[in-house]
Image (cartoon, rainbow, N blue to C red; front, top):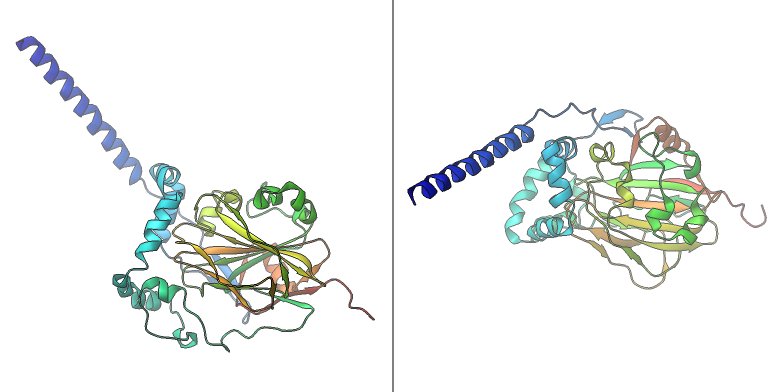
Length: 335
């Protein structure tokens, strides 16, 4: 009996020793110095100046996508819906209002454009409506406008453009989860508007027209920040997304897709009916940064030169909802 007891104690000590060793290795890996990241730079469209973006949760993002323990946490937990849902729901609680003022001050958010100044929760602030004249919409019928505030990239021909990381091309079929529909856009124009957490988070229609029903595609919840895209360029084809097709006589069938991301509580569609007007609100994202993607058929839109040039140089351009992003390539009748 005594010998068995001694052996059991010895085995228990060995197990605990192994556990402690593994925990020590885990801690060392988790605290391993992170690689320095190039800053996220973008062009201010009005001034033409190159600026550096202040990233919400930057250290957390770099750790998730560049540390072995961070990557394991990302794959096993962070990318899953439950994490984003739980965190998003916490932003609906009245207690979350204490986060609003520090957030406004840290990111220098202009609150003068908001319809109201008092909020019931952080998400109430995050999904705030703006005053009717805060985002003038270019109403010219030949013009397509930005559907959201954010940073924009534009590719005139997807088939000829590397997407973010050299060697990876945007997979239209994977993104739409529909190979036959994708055929229409294989050599078409791709526009990506990235919404960071400090941005206005309602999205609007870029052109007028009639709508198809919503197609919803299940997926994960990776971050869409460039710090994450540098490591995983295929994120847009992995994340949850939903899209509609806006049929316009000049721009053709325009795919408008909303892409979920880490900590996005949900995508909420607010429009009604199947005929919409350019600039009309389509919906909003709850807490978190996210993305709106537009797809145009080949030779349907001529993207503004400044947006194209900045994209070719590898930079996003800051843009506001309602601003012109391009004009139709289809001649008007009688011209």
